[in-house]
View 1 (cartoon, rainbow, N blue to C red):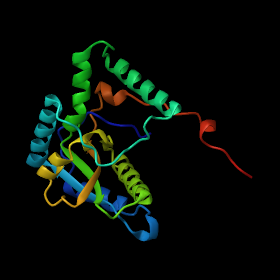
View 2 (view 1 turned 45 degrees about the horizontal axis):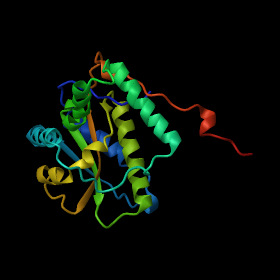
View 3 (view 1 turned 90 degrees about the horizontal axis):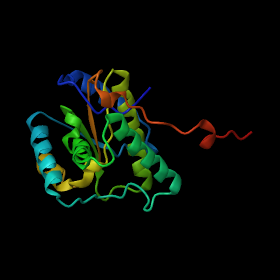
Length: 214
């Protein structure tokens, strides 16, 4: 069962394993075999410098500037309820009280530390070369990437929230001026005994989203 992993060991995933993951994911389908995705791996000093700038930006209240809108605004009521239920359940799981502002902010800051992962994939596409369907192609590639990681005993957590500072991404990831970042994917070997990795999100029952027509 796949689930989001937010605590990783310090062990680096070897280059040959990473390449196997990416090659496997590259078999994802895309319209007319266009393969519009771009994938960047950030690790080592580059990642630590990016992490430091991200955390400083979050702590200083730097304005966020997303380059694309992820969800409808306002959220449909059913979606909003699921999102609210998830947020409440995760905080309860971590033992963080509703009124504990300091711990809630610390909880939020983990996003901007990329959950401490030693390696992070960034998914991007070329500016001016996309439409709605291109995002679907990139989503198919992302799911293939997640599956390849999972099949090798690795964990990850997709992140849209860290798309808030595209200027910092371009500062630390060279030659990306003409690319739009879509998502970050921190990954690595899961800390088996960490409380956050024991959290499992709920899913809707089958009859709410699936039907058979004969």
